[in-house]
Length: 202
Length: 197
Image 1: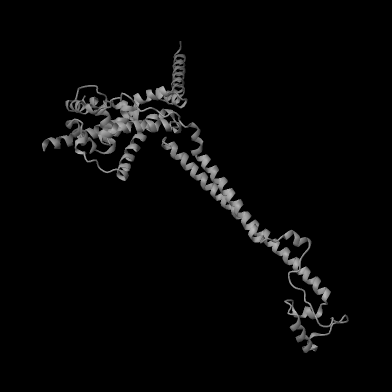
Image 2: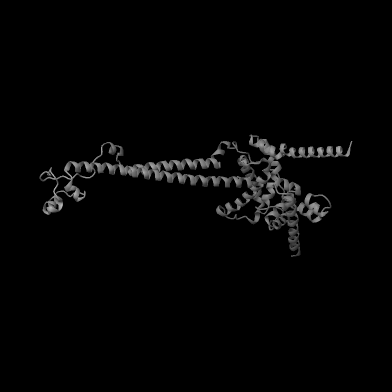
């Protein structure tokens, strides 16, 4: 059969195909006298550098380093050079204690505020304290100082708690971001593996 | 011997022969796979043997796509590329299909690079140094779809048979047969049209 001749050169020869073979055979491959020399190294050592697993590991390391650096910078920025431990041990008074330069406050029972309006106005002009007005007049100086110190300690502790909370929040966000990145990289690796299995060319 | 005994023996033989037939391919490697393994282990002569086996296929694939004058250099390029990347080939037995894909990609890359960097040579007309009749036949083959022209070049230029083409390129024999017949039919039509002019 002529079809067999086209397939495996068996059977009856097809004249047209034979003529084409003869004509086109002049273009057939001829081995060169000096083939190009092969390179000296096959670069086996280079292989792991471009493997998908290496790329994923490198990405994770870079992400971790960047996250650590970011957290450190953020913490340093929020501290602002303040030593929070020192605040706990020896709290400083952040708000100025009310100082009255006039006559010492009475040690006896405290007068009612609304009775002497002029005295109240004078004290207000002398001591512009942020504390509530009634405390200034009702609490003695020593107690006021103690109260201010306690408030300063409370403020420092509150700030520290807030910083810790912010840090934990940032840490949780970073971990979430790393998990998402890891998932994405796993997907990419699976796709790469699938592609390589379908097509043996890397 | 009773009929039941004979039937039992026959069944046993059949199952043994089936098991043996099934087990045989698992242990046997194709010669190409053995050569690929040898190259991976540093045997350069093995790569030379692979070159001799597959150079006509690579030549044919490139000839179906790029100008005749460029084919020899590109064949060298393809084998050099294959040598550098042979460790990335997962299945040693798939070397032929892998190499064919490298050759096809190199042909595409040839045109891409030429478009980006090179201008057309002034002596373009004189570079057609090949036989005019052969060049004309090749030009007609190149007007066919990719799959047909590649198979036809391997058959008519490189002189490979259908089963050889299937074995080297990794295509199924059925695909090669279809490509050959459809391609030849289209080529005959084109030849008829050309001769009618």
